[in-house]
Length: 101
Image (cartoon, rainbow, N blue to C red; front, side, top):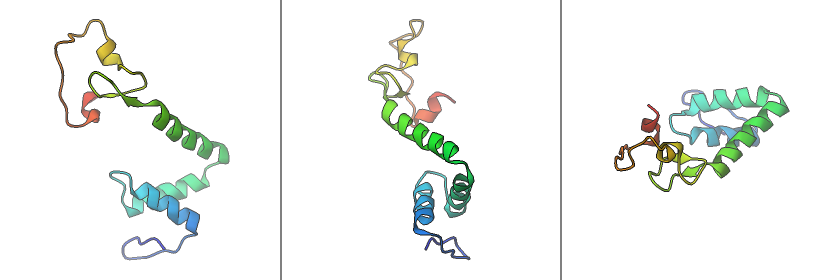
């Protein structure tokens, strides 16, 4: 059983597991996880496979830049590889999302 506040709902174990996993993501609460899970299972098999493959590909192919530790698909990110960039200047941020903000 997955608890959704005032109205606990019983789901099949696979759906409850999906909701629990989605809820572990930052900013995703119980109700949003439930909405996402229900949306996903209503999608076609092909759409779900594409989503699952995108998650796996990102996990396997994205790492940290060896220079600045920003997320990158290469050992050195595009920012650090840019020849016009001053390599003596480093931008320090607390979260990699701030780099693209």
